[in-house]
Image (cartoon, rainbow, N blue to C red; front, side):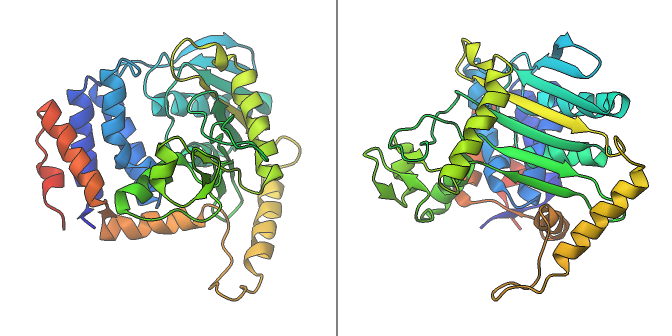
Length: 345
């Protein structure tokens, strides 16, 4: 597959989003988030999204100039409106507000409505952990209802992802991030672009029959929950926290998703150093377990992404040929110089 440097992809994405109407600072923040997803090994949330984001801008679903505003606030809670701007801008603001309030109040709850796709959820939990705050984040609601509930043969739920970040003492933070469906929709886009089949048990076609074809999903199919009834139950909880709690479902626009972040000061009950030591010991206990057959080591959530970023910072980011062509088409439509993605290394 074509391979590009981080700088080339960021330069290209910056130019595209600015041409689509985004101020330079917003364009830069969004494209850095997308490229970070690629570097982290999650192309489903990477530059593959650039053409669809431009389509949303042109359709009037995304205001590329918008920044979040506060709708309601107490000393430990906040409800933000993303004002239908880029979801990454709203998510970053929500995390920063939650971290600041948690450091003052001990625990904070921040929710966002009127926003678009927020990107890779793990980025925001990792951002909170970098600010020395424990974070639990959920995104859900009535947008893109593509997930069948356990036992069902029609979609009723979104992918409803959850993420969490836990800072440690001397060790790197734990960062978990996953959809409550077997796959994120972006991963199905990636499989389609690469011509790959989906794992068995991930989707049903429009007749409620099992399938491994990405096309069957996009032709009216649906995703199954991970872990059968367990993933389905977690998805319902996330929907209630993200949409029911915030009122996101009352939106008159296509996107009805909400995001909720719980931030916790790790020194809320005991000295920070004691918390860090306890978490380090927990992490050590887990990673010291002998690996099972087929595994080289036991890793904590977040470690594969950290290693991927370090590796891809040197080797570059692979982009499928289908994605590269879509990027070139978008650049041509906007009159943007596409030299950065025209030739690969």
